[in-house]
Amino acid sequence: MAMMHNLETESWSGEGVGTSVESFLARINREVPEYPPAEAADAVMSALCERLPGGLVQEMREQFPEGLRQLFQHCWKERSAQAQKFDKDDFYLDVAERLQINAESVRLVLHVVFASILSQITEKLAHKIEREMPPNISGTWNASRRAADLPR
Image 1 (cartoon, one colour):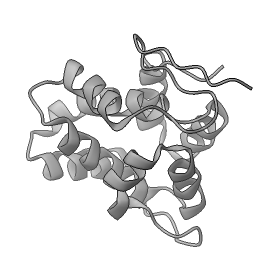
Image 2 (image 1 turned 90 degrees about the horizontal axis):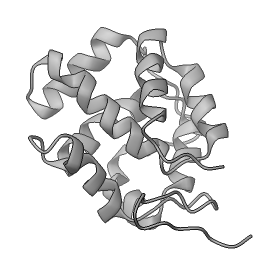
Image 3 (image 1 turned 180 degrees about the horizontal axis):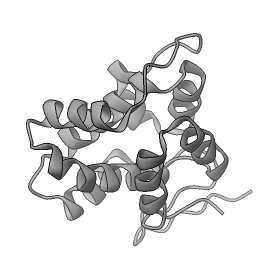
């Protein structure tokens, strides 16, 4: 299968290896320029990885390009690691505290970073992750999916 990469849309490669760190962060910077993109991505990814089962975290890691694996090195956990409680209010507060912003601003940051994450992973993995989320966070995950350039 030939690799597909559209520079205009920073499209997913089709082979489970995502795009570049630069395009991942540029997408976030375009949508929420008031927050440093690496910090916004790190806050969401850290909070998400703490709450997902280790096996899903490892699958996500494997689908990210090497540069993003390195960027989020401290987030990855072992396959056997258990998931934490996944509650909307705690999740929002966690991201807000990491970014030092008010909780009302978190939804937009989540939407943008989720879209960037979704542009890196397969649809199958996106559905597995969604099933681990509480309904109100999975709603944001699904809404951001429409903004992501999904694998076909």
